[in-house]
Length: 418
Image (cartoon, rainbow, N blue to C red):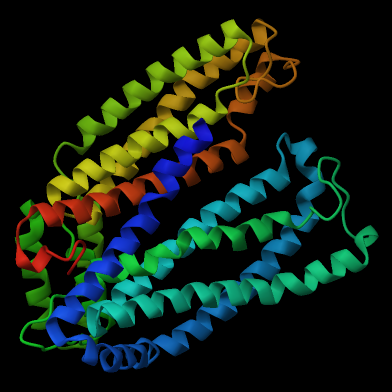
């Protein structure tokens, strides 16, 4: 049941919304220029999607992914057998870190799509974002596949881990490659969030990377600060010296990220903390009384739903992806505090009642200290953060789309336009 909840809340919204965005964009393109011009416009957008500076950036992403994968694999193989000594499962930690890395790659692809779409249009941005994901996958595979082949040819030369079956030692890196499938909708959504509305068939130019950074950071501010963002962009346009432009843009980006918290975010975060704490306590006592497993599944699923709801409602009210994401991040921090505040004393109760570890219900903790440390295991915390992040990001995107539809404004009529 909890796995179904995770799928419906965390995984389903992004691909469904991406399909809607593509459908609406295609319909509008046919209405504006007719089906006959669609092929020519698509070819032009594809050319724009790989023009400078995109293709040098793709090469850099591929190289960085390959080097990073090679380094992480070596570090993993050097430490994977030390997990029991350190008190956690190194292979499981690597798997959940791979899931979190896939979320980061989705963000990278979305930002790349938004940046290119800001200057060259929706289709070019979408293709650039997809190529970014392909570049990550290519770089990762180029480093991973030779190591995988060597492992299959001579497994005796690799570390032996008791809880991993034959051939599973390198599974964390293959989980990462599989998790990139979740990232596929985000180039579409990033391009939709980042693309400008074209006026009279003219495309808005981007002067340099500093303008682009400030544009992206201030384009989705809450309505109460949108005029301030417009003033920042206008002031940057009047600055010519490169050093001054860089300093002003970076200062504006930092200020926008720091002070863009929407009204009521702290109240929502406090509400999430109270709900997570109360239901976590109830789930712990119910599981203890009925001899069920631990509450790790609850920690993964239920806060994800709450964070999605908080991010969705905030983004819907402000018609702002950034507002929803900031509110979701603050609520996520509150949820983590609530989980730990309830989980640590409840772990002691479970240890005293001889019921097993609070997280999974397995075994019997030898001491109350080991029961508490089980709640703080990094693979559990990182896993929660990965799923919570997916929920918050999905909610912010869906809320932005619904909010802009609600605006009853032609410029916002194409779901996540702008």
